[in-house]
Image 1 (cartoon, rainbow, N blue to C red):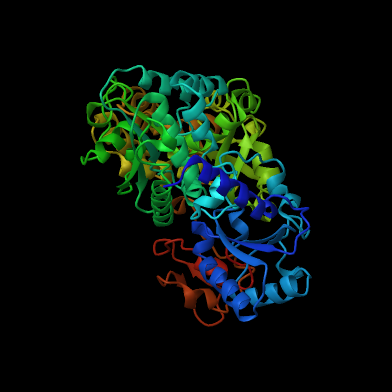
Image 2 (cartoon, helix red, strand yellow):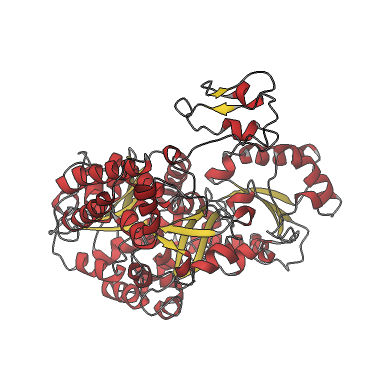
Length: 618
């Protein structure tokens, strides 16, 4: 158990020790080697890299060098990442075998390992993190400590103003003052709907009850999304602190975090953080010597996408199948076990401590008039700089894709971007300069969602993309209501017919009408937003739908049943290489004869295209 005085001493001492993490001009003999231990880099042997560094340093008896595991740095395309502070040297795609050279050349001899220096998209080597275009337009608030601190060390969190906000709230603010600060900040829920966070807190606080709960929604189910996971892996204490602040504000003494079991590193680190907070007396009875008590438990989800919907999540925590409840009543009135319950997602909580410390006015000045603060995106798909991005609200899609993301690989054309995951819409290139905020995205038929942003180049078929997202939604529907259970299935069947060359012009009308009906009549947000990929692609790429049903053509050549592979006789040399590699014996001809393809046998796998040395197959 630590007193406030103990924690203040830890903060003061550790702040001096860790100043080189943020002060790149610090003149010190000490070095900190930061090794990314997020899921992406861990899967690429960053655990082995860290252990190798420690082993070599011990063997060589090197002093004043510490090796630190951190959370995600964001630039996942360059992982595993190693950063050496205070000089801020950024090494990319490091392997365990590189550790010896880094220690010898950089740490002992004082020279940078040139071949490992991170390169920008134009090939320029960068000497520090701040020189990369990927970071120049970002503003890290929710991700502030990710990649800076060891997430498994509570003292490091405390050194960077950890638990200052909770102390301020418990010692100097009333419940209403806390809620008013969150309201004035303009923070909106980052889980998708964008409901004002302060209003949600206020409505939960105003309900009279002998028991209330605080819940953190960490059931991040969007394909390609990893924002919440990265925060939990890189800065778990910020979520614990924010949940405790929320508990004080609404009058709750119990919190639950619902996180999918597919996030083992996040679960492990959050449990470590809970145990450390309890040991320090930051969770438990009479926190900081006040009358306020608060505790948190982890609940694991089995990966059902629908459990990201708040009421389905509550059903799962209570031990039942994750079916959405009919609203009203809303969770603020009747949530967990019928008691008032506050639910926010991980990213929303990650903003709370910064707002309390810096003030509502500071946060209110970031972003747009109606969308305040920053937004974290998981940038993926056909983009060079795949990774985690945090930008002020109002940043344009063009800036994210081309300035931060580094543009499209192989200089291909940008075609569309999908925001909001399977529930979002596809944004075409004519809207590249759209500001990314709640209202602007809604106007063009998309949504913010939790923050997945998938970029697509001109090789993508938009009919096939709509089918892909509907396939996911159909499999993830809980089946409770008919529009979602049956409607999405029928929509998927229509799209499948189109991609197979069996669609008709009437199918386009049926698809659109069905999508509108599903959107208007489904019970929960999953069903209501499931038609978005279809409606947005029909709006902006209708010509591709017409080509599929009228001319039986797919301009992107993705729909195999709408393509035909042929051998150009004047280019074929009769070498037979394509024939020998065809998995279904669809290529005919003997000796040095020009080969032909039996279209009835051909499965359009494309093997022959890759094997032909004369480019005779089209």
